[in-house]
Amino acid sequence: MSAAGTAGPARLRRVLSLWDLVFYGIILIQPTAPMPLFGVVSDKAHGHVVTAVLIAMVAMLFTGISYGRMAAAYPSSGSAFTYVGREINPALGYVTGWSMVLDYIMNPLICTIWCSKAAGNFVPEIPYPVWAVFFISLFTVLNLRGVKASARVNESLAVAMGVVIVIFFAAAIRYLLGHPAAQAWTRPFYDPATFQFGAVFTGTSIAALTYIGFDGVSTLAEEVRDPRRNVLRATVLVCVITGVLASAEVYLGQLVWPASKPFPDIDTAFSFVAGAAGGPALFSLVNFTLLVATIGSGTGTQLALARLLYGMGRSDALPGRFFGVIEPKRGIPRNNVLAIGAIALIGALSMSYSLGAQMINFGALLAFMGVNAAAFLRYYVRAERKQWTMLAAPALGFVFCLFIWLNLEWPAKLAGSVWMIAGVAYGAWRTKGFKRELVNFEMPPE
Image (cartoon, rainbow, N blue to C red; front, top):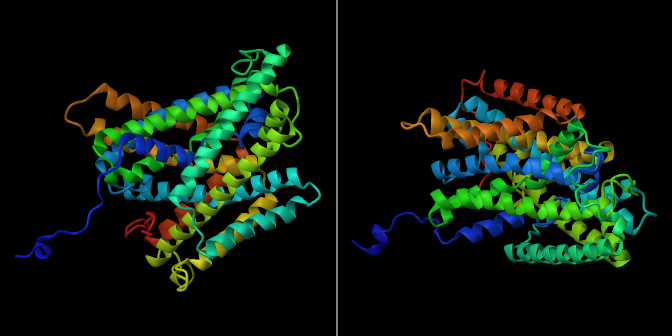
């Protein structure tokens, strides 16, 4: 028999090392992740941004352990929808998938808001609504033309952001050495004049967005060497490295710009912090860097959601005549890209960055709780040997995520609850009370 006749189906090659995964995860999250959130978290937490970032890191660490373990069980999928649906219940898997869709929808929206505010820092004469129309049009046109950033471009951008962070660190340290009054070294962690537990936990519910994307490491489980160990280790390392770097960024930012001093614009506050530390040149550099990074994020997530909606339309979970159509020339789900652009524009003109960020975390934290519950059932409840380590991580991850979720502000919880109720009602209708095949929230292949 010929070699061709005995060859099996093509498989992904296990070529990625532990540090390949770690670098990939950091690129997904972006090294500058806490900077766009800085002003909003500072406002909600009464200046305790670094404390909020560190508390959120604890929740993400335990959840990262659960993700790593579930990726070992389901190496072909990095989806919370799959983990919960197979380990707990298909209907709860559907609920988890629906909460994930909320993340995808809100991300282009908050990217539009942030880009519009950042551009307004450069050209304040142009009104915010005009900038919002411009940026969501830019995201949409790039996606309709099939323009996609390569892995090399993303890596180069991550390196450039790293350089900007180093420049900011140097400028901030130089500023602090020249301003002894600003050297209240412990104030960013605890300021007795403003500290309130409720405020800090509300800030934490937004600061958790710093880590969103760490679960993307699990999607490469089929391409990494020794996935049972390395996916778990990489996920935890990504959370730790992100947490340490983010804490350092916001710590210096809080020392340079104390909470008692109002920001010219709360949504782009870190650009003004950079300006205070390094002058107009550093203000422009940081503002421009974050603007470029956010354009990339908004464009990428718009296309990701368009592909997800296409998969749902193709499987007839959504009306296929609209959502399941591919534009033949460029192979893009054009209708979905346009629909998402319209939704993002309406949202950018009607809600705040803070509300949008909290709505992302509303959906993400629900998914994280689901993954922790799935890991608890698989590795502790159903295990022949009961090991306390298999109990502690998912239990603590679930509790921390639940606590942060409960501290979201009521407008976000109300809007998120409406979204979830609508999704459950739609799912029940589509499946005759969840008795038929459920909607699939897996991302279709490229």
